[in-house]
Length: 421
Image (cartoon, rainbow, N blue to C red):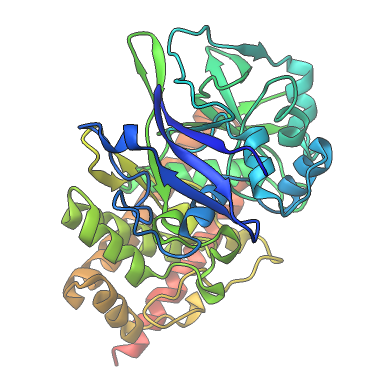
């Protein structure tokens, strides 16, 4: 029989993960957690009364793990079968997205233990930055390093102090995420940084990003929103993405594969957010922004709820914002349908009316947001080009992306205008 895994929230023991007869993970809250006055459900899909829907617990914890080629490389390196979520979580679940730590002991995690950080040399960082695949798999699971980040892109949780980057060891919290150049999609770090800066300029709440240059290439350095410094120590903040909240497996993150749709995302916020009207407005702007800048990869794992100390969730700052239209090999079909439209080039007033219904808004609210966001994007592009150039230097994205975005905005504006006549 497989030894269980133990789930901790900071220094508190939360519950146990075991394997059932079919090999799926099952979770149960420990009674000590349930008896605490400050206990909370670790997921909207894992209520404290234990009325957990079939496989929701397996999907929640599997969603903490890497996907795609990154997962394949890690499993090969650690000699773990690719479909063995339990063993992979055991090996790398020390520092995950959010506040949970997965260990092989139910002993409380002590905040008194000394943080373990291994410096990354400039030579090593330059090697990773050049698009050499496997940075994550090279580090995690080795020498007591237990890092896990969901997603298919090669990225690495790190600790940053000034200009020095460190690899956290054991269960020590990371503070930032490094994303590397892709061998398949040119200037991906610059693309994400530019689009995130644009989103910030037009008023969306986003993660803090910057370009970090090495001797070979650029990487994106992203400040983690699920970490906070308190009395000189870094604390993990609890969060979950929308696939976790809905009990959906990571391999089905796209709506056509059974993943979240916008109506479901809006309903999560309406029912559970501390400030539902404000967060619904943010979700609407995120949806329209992705449409207008050509991001077709805005799926359910790119939205998260961040939990406050009182346990009330709010919509987390937006992340993974990229102009996928810049790459011809990426499908233009949107990850979530917009009022019934999958092709962004065919969005009309009719689809915006459908979007309004999905959100429970009057159509005028959606229409006004489209008009205002369109103007803000076009007005902000020159300022963002200048800001990017002054902070991070020259890049081909400064010429390419504004042209792509202008074309998209004009096309969508024309399409909506024609549908109104």
